Image (cartoon, rainbow, N blue to C red; front, side, top):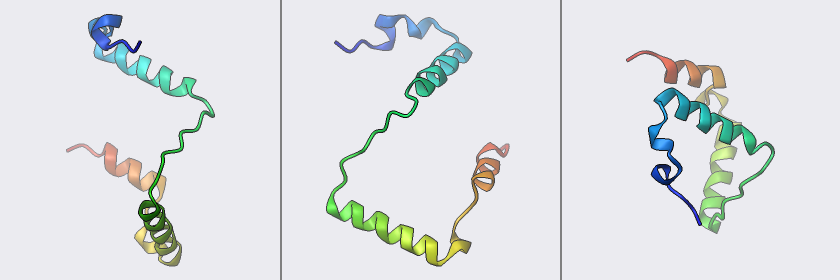
Length: 74
């Protein structure tokens, strides 16, 4: 049976404790892979987007550029 945050007492944790726990859970997944079920249309869309990115690298961003943008103060 799946329990919720209140049943587990997680709602009593501080924000910092919940973030730490979430990261710990995420890291515990290790190499576990989740393969979503994609429709044929979704698969075709991903293939098309990948091809577009390969053909026009100016349309893509580096991980550092994305991180800088996300972490930029408002």
